[in-house]
Image 1 (spheres, rainbow, N blue to C red):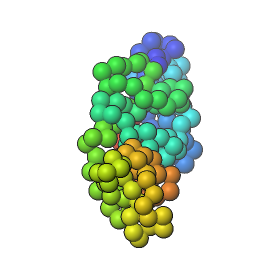
Image 2: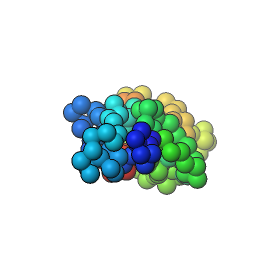
Image 3: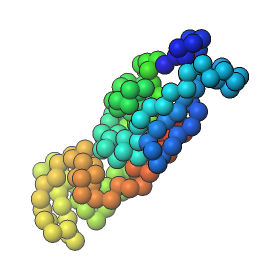
Image 4: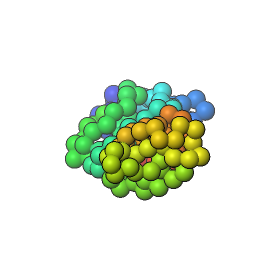
Length: 160
């Protein structure tokens, strides 16, 4: 996004997590001219992290989570770029995750079935979950992934 007065690219100014507003400003705004652009974008980065954590964790290596000036959230290849982006975080790549966090005391790999299955002390021992993507999805739906959400929110703020 560019300044309506001078055409310079807007830069990050501040983030208000309580209000869910990311503020931007024209570099000329600090020169004392209120005529330069200083818009706010309504986007709660905590909500973005919470709603997109599963897709972020299960994305293939080379994907990025993107928030644009309209507040839209999407995933793209890391080799592409748009002028409309306000925050971009590279996904870890599902193959680079330590699966222990998602599998320990929850599931184990069953070579005969070719899938992860629920283990004790869980209630539904033997239920087939599927591949690692399915395990992560189930953890995001029913488990504790707050640390991952916190880390993603921090990364989004850092990359504004």
